[in-house]
Length: 218
Length: 218
Image (tube, rainbow over all chains, first blue to last red; front, side):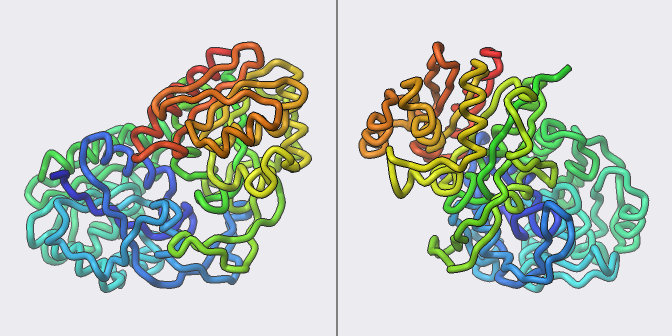
């Protein structure tokens, strides 16, 4: 039986959803390591950003429907997924992780977490099942688990984001783009990816190592 | 100076645009081989498909704007790009290659090609610069160049699509998913990817080899 790795998506595009390269590279690394990706996303609206002008259009899109593009239609509503059916879970980055899955992008350490996302992260932590978090997604994990677990995560080296992570009760650790940080006690693995990367191959290196580290912790 | 490889996108999502995995894996392979991707797409509308239900919604999106999601905003209007500034060009698959860049999906061998796409393909062929085509995109190349050049391409082994390719004046060659076909005379490299692939790692294998073969032909 293949290990089942949840991949929580937040839309389809770096400015209003999942960072597409990070999401695809996560799916590739899971498959190449002989595990099975279980894609999921919340069924909720978000403000659309035009990725040519980088401005909000005023229109809304749906996180689950747009995430289905990355998952080629094979995706679940996260409200129907429990930690019991997963061996690990990984959160790719993109602004969607900080704007849709929670509102860290607006409220920092005081972020409100989307309820089903919060439930799944807590279930995974309670079950001591590994959690991977890429790019800005460690801020989501920090905001969800900070007070109770004080996990150690990275977002690379951005001082403001690192300060907000520290304010959640979590610990921020600096990390180069091609590497990752493991919190062995809480089985949380994180990597900076496009928080620092200047090209897709740098992002790929960090994600390949992170996915491997998550699988090794199962 | 890095070699400049055009990557022609057709939207963002397998059912109405570029196949996202194929596009990202193409960008990764270009970067890993030390070349530079130049993403481009036509500025035109297309009918939106909901990737959860796989049905058309009745709404329109814009090929260039949606392709910008895959390119993280770094993308050109294809009408502003000539073969003179490229060392090679690669077309990822997805229905967008057969519905937006041309209408092969509807009209088969009698397909009309989007004018700037047709111009760039012809310029590349005339300059004997390499062309890569992934998944269904070889049908676009066949429909554009068939009568004049009779290129050899693959789409895997689908009999109906292969017949339509033959009808354009091109030659279809069967090919397994992890391999590729080279037409040395016309410097055209093609691979089946998700025409045959059952998982992302199979797609990746074919695309990595195809990109390498395209670069070797420069």
